Amino acid sequence: MKFLKAYFVSLFYYIFLFSLLLIIQHGMKEIIAMIVYQLIYVTPMVLLLSGILESYLKTNDNKLVVVFIGFLYGLAISIIFDGTTSGTDVFVYILPGCIFSIGALIFTIIRGKVEVH
Image (tube, rainbow, N blue to C red; front, side, top):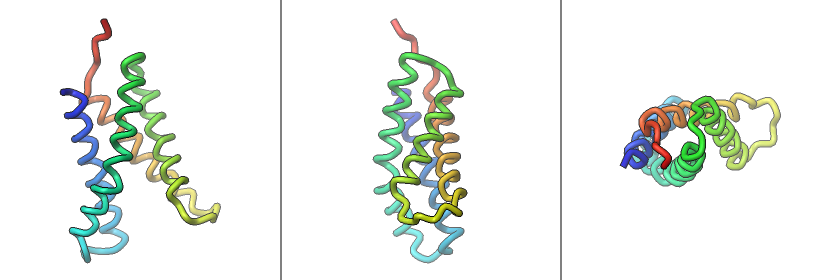
């Protein structure tokens, strides 16, 4: 139950933050389309990240490594789904990494410590 609660809170965080970024970039036009797009686009990525974090946290409870895993996951997602080959847009790659690392930390805090028997 803690996993689902942590997953939904972190999913809400990602959708809210990415929607804010899209609103800043495109304005308030088509806000519903942006939110639906974010639900379709972000949900599988957050579910995969939550599964990775859950499998790591069952063996080890190091929050710093969890933040680093979230950062690397965000970097990988931004590089995989980016269409540009310009090396000058480093910020475009680092921003999702920071967003996913904070989301991974939120997931870990809400999920709490798991007792391994």
